[in-house]
Length: 224
Image (tube, rainbow, N blue to C red):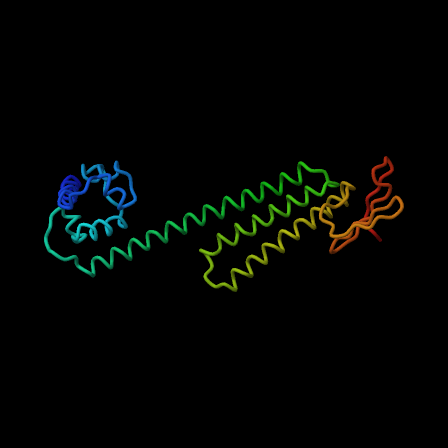
């Protein structure tokens, strides 16, 4: 494949159309420098733009690749094949972008959860708020990622539900460890009941009693 010859042919076709490089660049939604690099043979159009160029100049793709005109009409089969290849290329690009977005969301969500648990004290509701927000981002990231890996919708739903259950389990275990080993109040209680010098924190699987909150004699233990 002679890129110099192809570039010269593209230049001749543009001149036949009586259009400048800048005007052609606007038609193809590329830069004027890109058109110049094609016509000097320093670069080649990708398959999608090759189809657009063939349509615009009313030549066949083989004619562009060979750098010379051989027929008056474009071979429909060749054109259809090129279009399918372009669509496939675009789909592949979308899949890769979706994977990158998925990984970034999962990493950011996990970072948000870890930061919230490390920065905010157990008594602050901000720790649980940011942790839940991070969990939501992780779940969305998983949903974006598995869309390209799992075709059946039912399996995607099961995977997402499993991810939610896993995160809920991790939060529950985190609170259990916090109470059992560090004697601190849980972060993710769904209900609090206040009594005289006593706060009752209700979790789904256990209840925690906080005695003498805010004093030197504060005690945090599981309800018996």
